[in-house]
Length: 348
Ligand SMILES: [Zn+2]
Image (cartoon, rainbow, N blue to C red):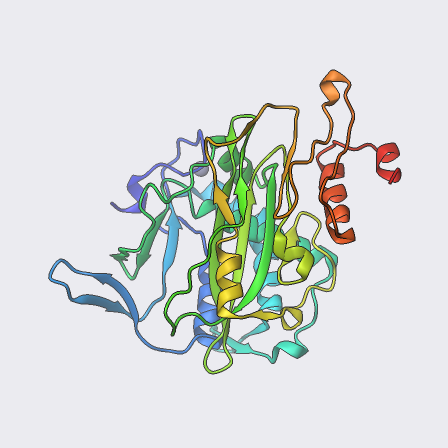
């Protein structure tokens, strides 16, 4: 179905989509990666019913039907500054040519300037937006018009509440989003390495936590590696990434730190990379927490209750914490969630 026959993906919007719709992974960024970073060649688009593979010279696109108004909201609040930060982080420069085209080049990562704290924030917002919109029920995955067979089937699509999409299409990062990045060895030429999930995402206040992970080849060939982006949506819970405290992964939302630089990321082995990909497991029904209580989910750290302000209870227990970093991370999240006031925060 042509995008123009569909309603805009923004909840409640009655407009029909424009012809282009919204590219969830922006066209300009895919073009920059294709021209400057990825090896030229043929992409496998799909297997036909006869078993033959359809081929294309274009990489994967993920599109959403979107009206002109909501497209401009996403541009203004996420894309314009977010894509600029993403390109800087990936060490890609673009130059406008006299003939009206744009030339792209990949600079050595060591010489790519680090992101300021403002740019790191834009990068983090952009990652959250991209990885959540990928799961929108109207998202179409295609390569040059071929619908790709590896498109996540319905059961693999995360089911996020409409309010999450309403926030994104209003230009806001939804409450309860967390994002990390890691660099992993290039897995495209090897047998897939499988790892078990380490962190269960529980159900808090009726909201089942949702993970979303996406790999982007950041440099190809012999010493190539993949930049893996990971987002978790889990409101009313503190989510701690086990790879964050070891330095294998870096948090980019909320509160990314200034000085973010791709060359500074340790490139993880295939095994450690697989562990990062598989970090979070969705546990829909096993553990439920009522609203007002807050769970921390992290490897080696049991539940931390951060108080029930509505009922006047205020407690802050951190069993099995053996790392200063983890304590700090928990405190940052607790503060952001409004679970700790400055008085409580200063008491150690
Ligand atoms: Zn719309």
